[in-house]
Image 1 (cartoon, rainbow, N blue to C red):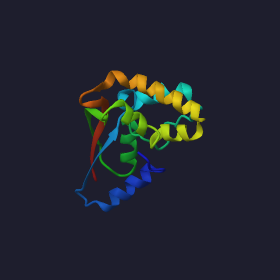
Image 2: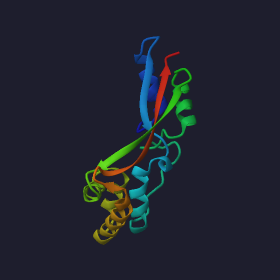
Image 3: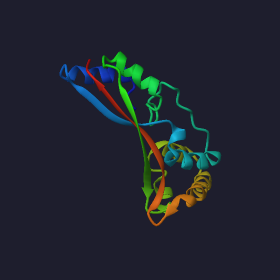
Length: 156
């Protein structure tokens, strides 16, 4: 998902496999299918400086969400037709909303946005995230839906 040139990267993987080799990996599907990542981001964005939107071919967390793109990349890298299995799982984000909000600025798109924002903007964003996540908190922690692909392909 984070390769600058995914075809070259998978071509290198293809070269290291035996003629009967197989590849399997899990990647996130699209942002709308992954509320665990989208809910905090949508809540925070009105309070933060604008963030650039990645293009459809740019590396990133959800860059393999488009099944057709992944299929094209793997075929161009020399793999046979891949198979895709949808994996839908609840994502445990933390023990409580305070923990999730405390970690929101540590990695990912919100970390970059928080780094560029004024302190008052960050506090407003954190308050909005807190409100958005509150309905998802239970005795089991904060849990939201997540969606991945299990992708499998062979060397030929």
